[in-house]
Image (cartoon, rainbow, N blue to C red):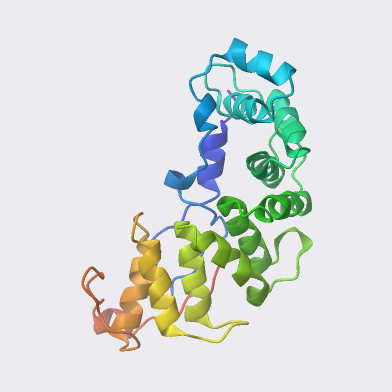
Length: 246
């Protein structure tokens, strides 16, 4: 059986806990499983035959919903050969969710040849409409130079900011990390702590919690109610900041 879209998306965002200071995003970082974009809410309960009729009448949102169901194997056999053309048709109508799913297909190589450059282009089109997941992905790819892009954190920050201000937890973490690390942007521990706290406000983000505790332990920011307990100094003396693994 071919894997469904949800595990594919989930494998792209695994952020494992680390025991060293200044924990960075891993190679597979993307978005938290709880934040995988849902299907089209208003069409979630529409039967497949009715969706197919809507698709025949060029209903763009129905194309996204039906494509999602084929990709996920929800009520139909999992079939990327059918999902991708539906996403592509809807994407031609500038649907940001369809553009996002098409981008992830190219990034993962499911239903289309793996092509990170094409993925970046579709993420960018979707991000232009402020679709949070795409803004995060585009920022991630720019920060780490994926898809033939020259790596630059300064170029990534505006896109991460767009997603972070929409309460996208992984964007908040990565934005906090950018200010924590201070590469291509001015280092600002207080800004880093702010975004680490935002990253943990709705979703459990172990890396954000850990990095925040490191800043508190180092005396760079003050502990606030609700913050994780500061790590022990003895646990940090023998460690060095961990560079992001690209």
